[in-house]
Length: 210
Ligand code: GTP
Ligand code: MG
Image (tube, rainbow, N blue to C red; front, side):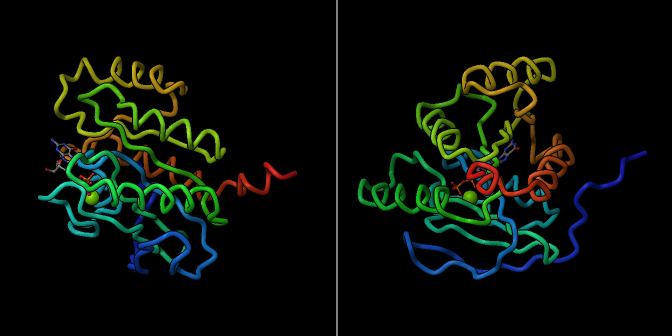
């Protein structure tokens, strides 16, 4: 028998996109959870699996297409923020220069941000950019969990050791790394549970200032 779903999705509303630093953002005061990762890591697929919708976030044929932060309100309770993927070689230097202030500005200054889900491709070592991002998140102080994506591409016996290696490479605890697959659904409920915990936790910014 299946356990109770830790995150039953009743309603999802797309609120809009933030395209440049300091630009429009939704005016809600709901807690926000952001999803970060290299382009093509499987972010849109993970989001769709998480909320059990086929096409909430568009799974791309053209990597690196999403250039905005997209905000989705869930159950009227919290907001998922889809960050643009980094590290796609064909994206122009100019685009990469606008990307940094956009993402970093959001992560540093969003009052509602309660946590980040950092995606890492299970088939590869974390890239230098992955490490930079995880270091940046630690510097900001935002609670972070890692979703290890595309684990259906590994042998079953490889998944746990790979998760441990990834944690070590990123300087995180094993418990912070959740093996995931959008194909088999592995890790969906565990990730949903982690997300619900992040949403419910008091704001780390308030705690940091005490
Ligand atoms: P961008 O938005 O372009 O940066 O990519 P993304 O990170 O949103 O990745 P997306 O979900 O669009 O997936 C990229 C490719 O990986 C697609 O071809 C997906 O079908 C594939 N993919 C995503 N998740 C999985 C997974 O869990 N297993 C397997 N086998 N393939 C996956
Ligand atoms: Mg995407």
